[in-house]
Length: 523
Image (cartoon, rainbow, N blue to C red; front, top):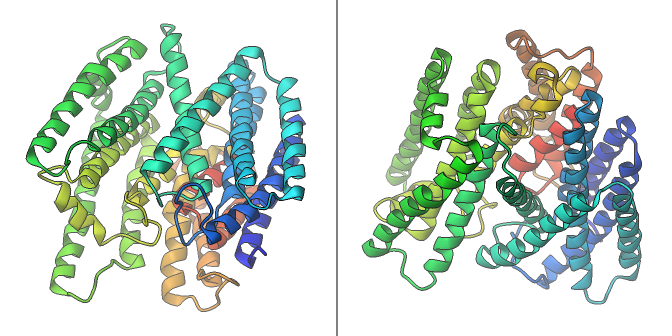
C-alpha cells in the first residue's frame, strides 16, 4: 500500500496537471491525464520492486520511484511551449512543442511498460490502464504528427533506451527511476537535436548560444563515456593514466568538439566566445562579480574542511552550511537575469561543463587534483549522493539554469512574456534559490509542526511561500521587463503548489521544483 507522503505528492502533481490543462485544454490534455493515472499505478508497482530488490538496475535508495512527477514534466513543458508559440504565431516552435510533448509521453510510457513487465506477478489492472493510456497517446500522435516528426520521436526513444542501459549499469544508485527518466530523457532529446541540426546546417538558422549549449552538454557526456570505457582496462589513479586523460581531453576537445561547433555556428568558437564575453562593459562587470562569488564559494569549501580537521567529531556539513551555496547562486543569477540574460545563458553552460569535468577528475581520481576533490567534497555529501557520483551541486546548477535555457525566446514579444510567463526565467531562483533555501533554514531551526509522514515542517513551507512572494515583489521593482498583468492569484497558487511538492517529494528537488514552477508560469 502506498504511504501517505507518496499519496500527497501524487495529489499535488495531479493538481498541477489539471491546473495546466484547465488553461490549455486540447487533445493532448486527455493524453496527459491518462499518462498521469497510469504512471500513478505503475509507480506503486515500481516502489514494491525497489523494496523487494527486484529492479533490473540499482537505483538510489531512501526514495520512492518518483515515476509520476517525472513522467509529467516533459509532456507539460511541451504542451505549454506549444500554446505559447501558437499564441505568438510561430509555427516552427509550435510544432517543436508538439514533438517535445509527444516524446515525453512516449518515453514515460515506455518506462512504465518496462516496470509492469518485470513485476511478478504481472499486475492485470495496471496493464489494462497502461494499454488504455498507450492507445490514447498513440492515437493522438497519429493524428497530430507528420511522418518526419514521428521518426524524430522514435529516434529519441531509441537513444533513451541505449543511454539507459549504458548509464544505469555504469552508475548504480545514482538515480531513482523518475530521475533517470528526467535526466536521460533530456539528454536523449538534446543529442537527437544536435544530430538533426548537424546534418541539416542552414546558415543563419538558430542562434550560436543554442548550439553552444547542445555541443557542450553532449560533448562532456561523450567524454565521460569514452573515459569510463577506457578506464575499465587501465588504472585511472596512476600518473600515466592521468597524463593520458588530460592529453585525450585536449585532443577530443580541439579535434572533435571545436570543429563540431565551428560547423554549426560558421565561425571560430573560441574567438566567438571571447568576443561574446567581453562585448560590453556590463558583461565585464558581471564576469568580475561572478568571479568574486566563485572565489567566495571555494573559500567556504576550504573553511569548512579546515573546521572538520580541527573538530574530528564533525564529519558532515549542516543543512544551513550547504544552503550558503544557494545564497551564492541566487546572487549570481539575479544580476544576470536583470542585466544580461544571454551572458548568463552562456556562463551557465560553461559552468556546467566545468562542473561535470571536475566530477570526472574526482570520480576517476585523476592526478594531481582527483584525491583532493574527493576529500573536499565528501564533507557536503547527503543521502541523495548514495552512488559513485556526487551530483547535488550539478543538480543545483541545472535547476537554476533550465528555466533560462528553456525560456521560449522566439515565442516571446521583444524577448519577454507577459503575465506569470514573465517570471519563467526566474523559476529556478524562486523555487530553489529562495523557496527551498528558506524552507530548509527556517524548518530546521524553528520548525515544530511536521507535515504527516515527512521530516519537513509546516513553518518551513509557509515561510518559503512568503519569501517567494516577497522575491516576486522585488523582481517587479528591479526588473522593468517583468509585467505580471494582474496574474497574482495564479502566481500565488503556483508558488504554493510547488512549495507543497518540495515538502513531500523524495526526488531531487533542485531539479524537479524549478521545472514544475516554470510549467505553471508558462501556462
